[in-house]
Image 1 (cartoon, rainbow, N blue to C red):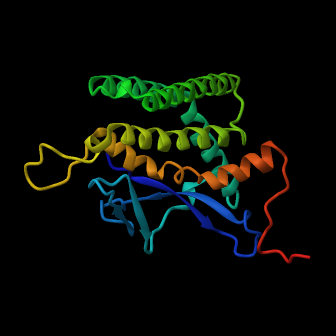
Image 2 (image 1 turned 135 degrees about the horizontal axis):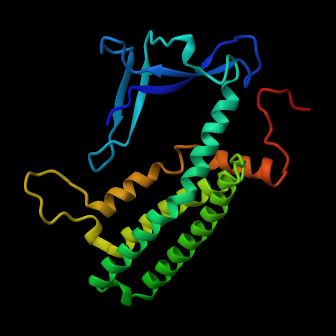
Image 3 (image 1 turned 30 degrees about the vertical axis):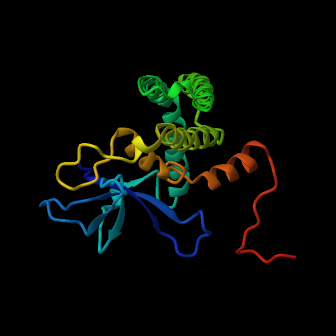
Length: 239
């Protein structure tokens, strides 16, 4: 499936402060005749050969004024709403995927005899407890969505929690599998084709980046949830 639109944050008022003067625009990837609208996608290749993300370059790309969402110069608010729903909405069902992965991991490690290792069992117990926490968080968030509440800064807790879990879980599964995680025994054409678990390991290296980096999520939680002092603004003079 290929997208025919992307959203773009455009500076529409050069004199406004940094969060003002930005508009949220739906940018067509192609013109009406099917030719490129100046949007170039360059895949970022993973070590195992696939690409989940791209570099995006825009050259003389154009969009109609009618494609501005939320009004001129109101793009920051629309962006925060988009990210809040991405982080929050993702958490309502994310536990289903990770529960399935957990039991698949248990079955895989049982078949290979790895569950006799106490460290492996400890790691599985850690994973199970974290998946259950995600389930409870998802139910709480789902009840808020059903009550028509906007996802607030607390959605950053969910994003931070599941993305860091995914990295640690896939890393620990790689360790538990040992050499099996790196060796390809049925290589026929000289290409390294990673299996599903190794692919997930590579894929989740980016989970703490997309949708808002883990560092940004910690700032949001610290400042807007816990009420801690704001991070110093390097653009302002310091006493």
